[in-house]
Image 1: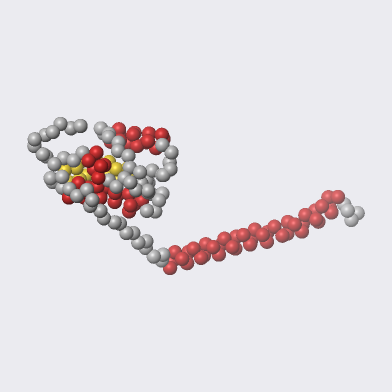
Image 2: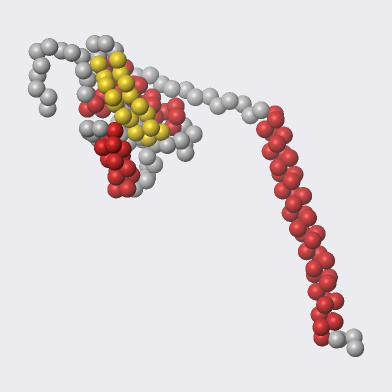
Length: 165
């Protein structure tokens, strides 16, 4: 616990931001790690990955460099595991929401994120269709290459065993 300072410089601790995060979500589980340096932070995140099972998968980490409520200055880095298509939009949103809750002083402040994927371009559709056609041609070529092998097998067997002689 920090001692009470009569001069409020507006600094916000990481634990205060952590309390404002919507950690009751089904998608993301949030765990607060207090680290002294970047190396310490990195090591703790790495060890947490080894200690805990990867379900739900670790979508990312937040590193808070500084947070000052009076100056409205918040310096945060999001480390994202981009194996999920939704993590780049959703994971940082929880920290942004926590920052806005601290900055406005409203614990119930909430905003939603809506993502819309870009349409698939016709060029990509054409490439996909061509690739499927190449797959068909390749498989057909292998099948046709095996037909003479089946026919030649009997001829070779006759020669080897000299069935006709």
